[in-house]
Length: 292
Image (cartoon, rainbow, N blue to C red; front, side, top):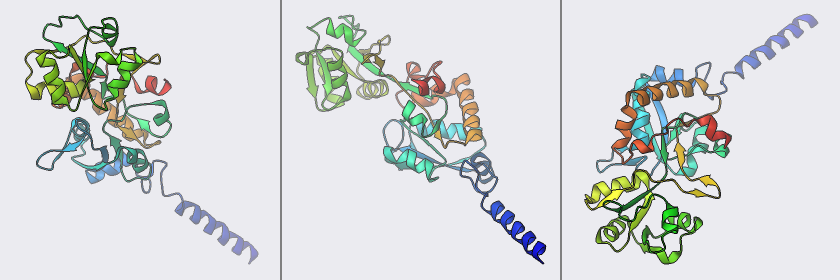
């Protein structure tokens, strides 16, 4: 009898252990990974931070943006036809991924060493740096913030509250060279009218602003040298992020993304949102960025 009871206890313990191990490290139910479940259901849930040009609702209420359309193209390549996009606050992206509210997150999230400890990033999809626009023909030969430092007669227009004000101060440009304006159209107008010699903002924002204004007397400085602050380049690289342990989903995403890069389709997608060839990630890798 004692042996029978002992045997029953062992069986119950084994059954309990099996029942308690129905969740994979990636958080998917049973033995099915996030990728397998998404392919079976034909649907994946992606968290986006609402910010133009990365993710936003258009005038018809449709979700679009650079990160939205890249993710949509990648998942279509993987045979996952339905991408359920959810807009949220930027600070809610990583917690939402970790709590399994989202399967993937993206939209304006730079790869940084701190974030690399919380999520697994895919390979970079774009790079974002500062941009400079000048009067047509670049008469003052401006190619960097340092060129503005070296020419105290240069006037530069910046939008009130923009991070570029801090960047310009950090590289040594005197505030007497600033003209602070209230919005982007005022920036464009100040340069077109000749009140200032240059304007600066992020690349995609500048590209979109110039296209909207149809500014014919302004040139973007294509060979602009990115500024450094405290010895570090301020250029950022953005990517989709996955739960730690969702290795098959990340690998599949990277493979499909590489196809978009190789075919030129990635540039076609992001160019609709003000990105140019200069905003592609080049040879930079996530491994390099996580080690910085």
